[in-house]
Image 1 (cartoon, rainbow, N blue to C red):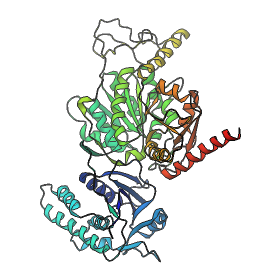
Image 2 (image 1 turned 120 degrees about the vertical axis):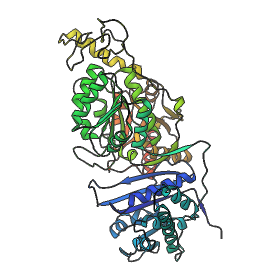
Image 3 (image 1 turned 120 degrees about the horizontal axis):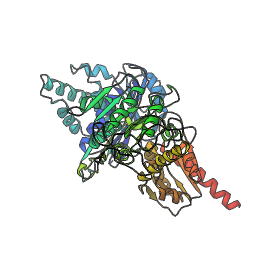
Image 4 (image 1 turned 30 degrees about the vertical axis):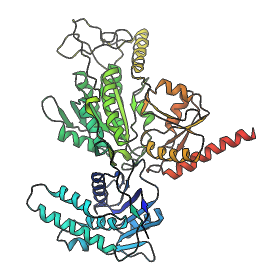
Length: 574
């Protein structure tokens, strides 16, 4: 009987922090992507440094992956707690691989036991347990071990003494894991060969994509304080933002970070910081100063569960309103919310361009689900990617920096056109004033500059339908996969999406105002983006979730279908 071919599979590695749960998923992702498969990982772990329940999910597919996947094809349980907590997520034809040295399920006909560490010790490399697990996976999905062997050889050929022994031990572990599962007839079916796209790809995490986007945009100063899940951006900058005119620094607080950026931007530098919700809250007063003084800078807010310490290692989309309106008084910050790892790169380049174009602070609103997930993306063509730079004043002294309601080049310290930039309301040359007419003039000037960022960049499918789905940020992927199923079922529903949340594209607003209902999947309690759309005269309704985890596709399909059917039934009764 010929083995059934699958187009993708979903595997979850679950156990304690420090057991190699995350490493196993990352190595699988790296190997599969190098061989030509599309991958996406999702990691969730506790906030302590070591220990605590941790799991990482990897989806490997012959086509582009939009979501982490709903049901598990394979669960790798490193301990009994992991088995007990995750067994219900395994599909009816799924398989469990468990560490038989740790526990034995009382009765589970879909489970295979392997002594992970014991088999690793047989190779002479006690750290090869991950390879034992990956070897087991090769048989369960009908893979030959050759591509993993190639990956191991490439990964550990570093020109160091002992490389050959490490390679040999890991390949041996691979075969021991594969052989250990051969006593069972359990398999999930053969995974189809990869379909390599006709363009080069790279494997990145969201935080890496943000960092690389900043480097391409020409970031010169990065000041940040360590905070989950934004810390990897700081680490990247400390390692890579080096050389003449470059400066990366770990500050003592987020207050120091934002004020250092205001100084750097005032001095003519492209400046950036990265933080999460609690740190962003501390930055509000400094952001208000940058808005008032019209100084370009970029803030990456990698959202996590809140408020307060909240869920520091879980995902959420609950900082939108504070990102749009931080500080106090009348402030409306430009906000870009990427919906994929790929968009993290382009959103960062665009954020720097926006900061230069309108001369003020810009927020990149990322999320933990993007920050820590690996995804293979099309390698950007940097030669085709526009980078906007500082417009510097070159005229005579006596320059009025804030004259009229139009953008003006920025004088730099030591150059012509000196001006004062402080936190008080000011006149056209920057001198402090409390005159009512000046406050009106400058307030209108600051808000009018947002029109420089308005565009027509948005996605649209089936605009003829009266009901539409419009996700934002990291919920784009699960919502897009759900929409594909809804579209295939013939449900009359349209699709809209943009990562430009403030200002929204005017044409998009105009089109959405014609809709009977716009459904907004978002990971927060308040339905924040839906409320933003309603403030623009759009009949929007949120589909919310606030579990700290991303949407499941099947849940979105059900909830969207139920809502549309309710609307249709009301029409019939009317």
